[in-house]
Length: 232
Image (cartoon, rainbow, N blue to C red; front, side):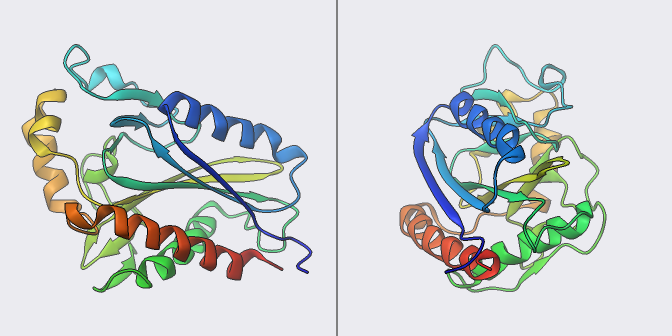
């Protein structure tokens, strides 16, 4: 038996607020957490999540958005969740694979995610090598950053972390399909320009009719890959 067996938690579909409160609980629990944990979940309805330091009122026409709005306990920009595969990873500082350096920890986790996606789809998968390749850092889909997951040069996933002295929580999203562009244009101030940048930077992993099949395959692949990487 591994000394640090990976724990799996599948919390299913719940409200965005519940999901982010659950991740905050995991951050608070790092002080006593010994094993790594992979948490899988889904959104009850279309959601916009935003990083701890983002003010969404600067960017959203709040009176018209058909999204649930929620603050993440991590950093990063605004992310539109319509058809995505979301997960969180908890890695305590006591674990042998724990990485103190922030960028190196992103590379470590996202490389595991890359290997998972490779099991599910074809195409040229890689991790972004540059620090920032977009001009809109407030919007995750518009601005690939270092170690983001790329498919044929397009961003297909975003991630953010929250760290304490006891470890870190990593939140990840894989874009199965992209949100309806017109919906985003109508929900954002200067929506046309922002969506134009998103179209240049990001793409979905699969077709709409493949979403549920790909979601199931990703779940199996991700659990397998994280077990191989973290069960020590």
